[in-house]
Length: 418
View 1: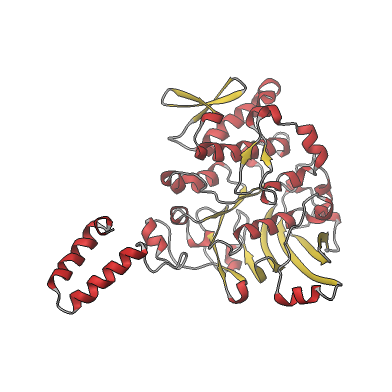
View 2: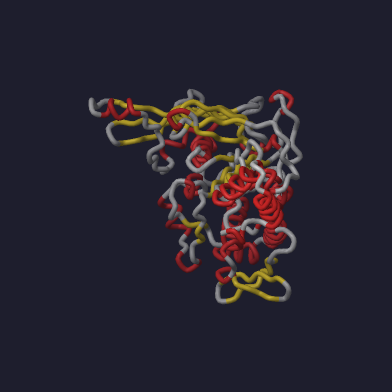
């Protein structure tokens, strides 16, 4: 399934907000905008605290459908706290409520009845006393029936928080993990729990090599596609329980890779595990359909990698709807405006969601930072701006030395003046 649209009310930073999301089956003419080249990528952009991670959490809860209340997801401070809410708290009673309404496009993989072309999800988060609890509020639960099964390949969605820690193989116990929390909730748990660890590649891939070589070959091919050219290549070799990655003849175990590679390969390995366990029999892994959410997609990545990461993901998994967050102008410059959803805080710290129809694809980082997407007046440091302003004022008053100094500073940068 893909998510088409989401409505938020009193959900953390959002008092009232709604947005449409792009995906391969989206009706762009109906949305009144051209289809982007990357039809399966949505980038959430905004200041810290504007609600990027909050929106990922809301989408995750909506995806759980009628299983949301019993999923094991703990709702912590999801309801927006307005001053009047705190005033009501003194008087007791049922104080506040947040709601998430979402519309989805289902696929054959989702096992919905014939003739169903759209799914609706209505989730409520209620507050009584100091307790928040989640409940499903839509009348039609039947079409969502496969969501209650851990084994079903229907309704595939995965989410990754900014803290992407991979569990040590020797500490990983899949049986214990499955007994503690619903499998579908596990796939989004790191968005809600910073300490939640991801499934290590070495804990599941060797079994596929031994028992299902066709799937194993697909995983290896897809893993190297997802990493992209010019990076470490997955070899399939194991040393001391760790998979080795090779570049320029040098083989390095996973734990010895840089933070950037470990962060990226960590969630990619976890994603491939979940794709393998849900991809219908007879279907290629890159044909699996669903939703993948990633917070801070550029985490630890070199600028050159940031430029290519989303086009690489979109091409390797063309039927996955990606919803990611970032602060990187390089990430923004790799997309078109149709892919980008901006968030801005308004009065009373209430955030809005919208698209800015301004060409951004192909701009360099400085140009992107000066667009409405970031809203910066200048990319210079504050001290440098003050120096230039002072020299400019003096030059206008006829100070020749100041005029020459201004030209010199603008041509070579401000390092010498610090």
